[in-house]
Image 1 (cartoon, rainbow, N blue to C red):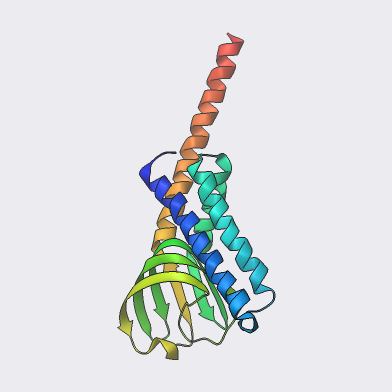
Image 2: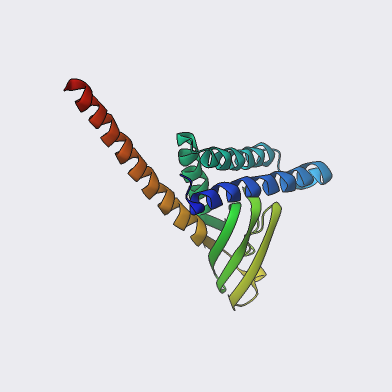
Length: 184
């Protein structure tokens, strides 16, 4: 698992998780009244999960593949419609569809939110991230709902899933070959 794209995913998760930890720390310690009590432990957990998954993936441990699949899967969909859910740990290319139009946003970083929120069409969350936007829409803040699809996370989820399938099949063939050699 020393392929360049696997290293990219691992480092993206680590850096994104660390940026998320920094952003969540800032919100919880510098602006404690602005965060829901239940949100904080979940945010810390998601950030730590991202860092651990990235590290385990870089170390080529089987748990790194499983955790990274989970982390990538959690980043695919973001939503803002009475509840807001956003999880970002690394690179993103997000297609945002809202009640007022369409936007494509590219960037990266670390951010997380899971809370009730008035729908404003944005997918903002506590954390540190950088984004470049191309919009074909009216005023996003006037949207009554928004759905984002992180194409980078979806792509790497599929790549990791396929790699996991290949590695599992190889391990099974090796196990069968060893069993046959012992039985001969």
